[in-house]
Each structure stands twice: as structure tokens, then as C-alpha cells.
Amino acid sequence: MRTKGFFAASVNYARTFLIAMTAANIALADAPAALTRGAKYVSLGSSFAAGPAIPAQQPTCGRSDHNYPHLVAAALGLNLTDVSCSGATTANILDTPQGDAAPQIAALTRDTMLVTVTIGGNDISYSASTIKCGGAAVADQCAAKLDQKKIAEAVDQLPAKLVAVLAAIHASSPQALVVLVPYPRVVPTQDQRCTGLGLTADDANYFAALGEQLESALVNAATKQHVLVADPYVHGAGHGSCADAANRWVNGAKPAGSGASFHPTANGHNEMARLVLAALGVPN
Image 1: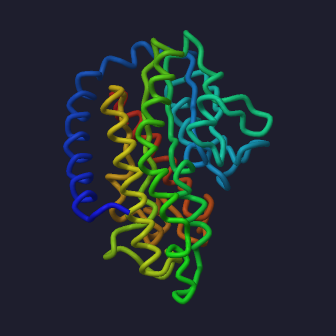
Image 2 (image 1 turned 180 degrees about the vertical axis):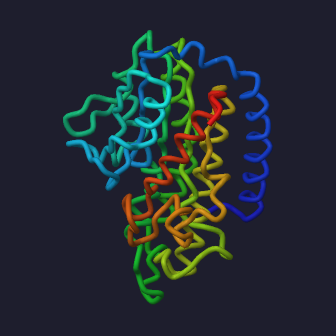
């Protein structure tokens, strides 16, 4: 794992970038004029885009008709093709089929006008490992028994993979506005944790650090590829699994009301949709 200094630098970098992106979003306030009613919108990504366990579920992929892509499409009157799928990796976007589904990039066309994407967590076993350790006892030392060396290597490889995904999106849909939607903060800061999180202190610290690395990789890739960012991670304070139902954006080990373990709730998808609209310069 990386040093604390790296994490602090990543946080500061992300905040600086997001301030710059806010200024850019103001300048792009007229950009949604290109998003006329019926314009083509494609959603790419993993379960954090798909919305498992949020009603109503579609037949495959743990995909909800009330995930953030559907909410954005409804708000702007866009023609949505949602190919987000639980378990997807960057390879499943670029060139590797997932089950019977073609690589997600195949959904993009030259006349696609908006693309949103949430990807990368499964490349570093983020969700699978967190779920595995949910509810584990202190004596289990769950996170310590993970293949942390392999995960660290995957983290090192992730930035280039994310850049490749964003570059491929630009190449496939050169007219499209592209909005990267990072993962919400799954593990809250230490002062906002409770037993409802379902992770031991050591496990929580490990996954908090992993989430920080995922956030940093996503923000850096967005910078390099000049895409918009709608970032729930930086707004996560007070919205973790220990928040009350009205303010909870992410579940802990035991889902409460909507959404899967360690995944966004319906409220979380509402917030991600709001942030996408804000990134596009749409008042909401």
C-alpha cells in the first residue's frame, strides 16, 4: 500500500482539480444545448452505475431503472442506452464480453451526445473484497489475508486503464460530452464510523485507503482526458452508512432500505444524478 503522504497529496490534488472543474463547468453552462430532447445518451460502468437492489430491477446485470443514468435521462429527455453491469471492469468496457453481453464500448456511436461512466473498482477488487470482509470478526484479520500485493499491483495499473477507457470513448463518440462519475465514499472517515459499517477498524482503514487510491486514479484520468467530473466522493461527509436514512448515500455491510452491501442507495443514485446535471451546467 502507499504511504500516508501519498494519500494526503491525492486528496489535495483532487480538491484542487475539482475547484478547477467547477470553473470549467460554469463556462460550459450552455453545453447542454447540444443535448436536445431525444439525443443519444450511453451509460457505461460497473454496479455503482447499474444500481443493484434498487427497484425496479431489470432482467440482467443488477441494473435498476432508477439508477443515476435513468434519472439523468429522464431529467433531460434523452434516449438512454444503459449497458452498465455489475462486476464490469475496464476490460469489459474496452474489449472483453461480460457473459452474453458485448464489450460496453460497442454501444457508442458517432452520434452519441452524452456518455457517463463509473468504472475501475472491480479492476482492484474493491467491492468484492469489501463485501468479503463485511461482518468479519477482528480475529479474522480479513483485509490482512487478502492478496494485498496483487491488489497494489492492480492499483498501479489502473490509471493507464482508465485513460484508455476515456480515450476510447472520445474516439467512438467524438461529439459526446463525457462525464466521469467516481465511486462514492464507501468507508467514511474514522469520526463518522459506527458498528453499522460492518468492518473492523483495521479492515475499514485498509478499504478507506483503497477507496482513496481509486478516487485519485479516476480524477487523474479525467484530467488527462479532459472530461467532466461529477464526484460524489468529495461530498461524502455525513452521507455514509452511519447516516440516517434520509442522508445515507451508501450502505454498510447490511443494506438499509435500498441498494446492495457497500453500494449506493437510491438516495446515492439521486445524488449522483444531481452531480451529473451540475457538471453539465444544468440547474437542479
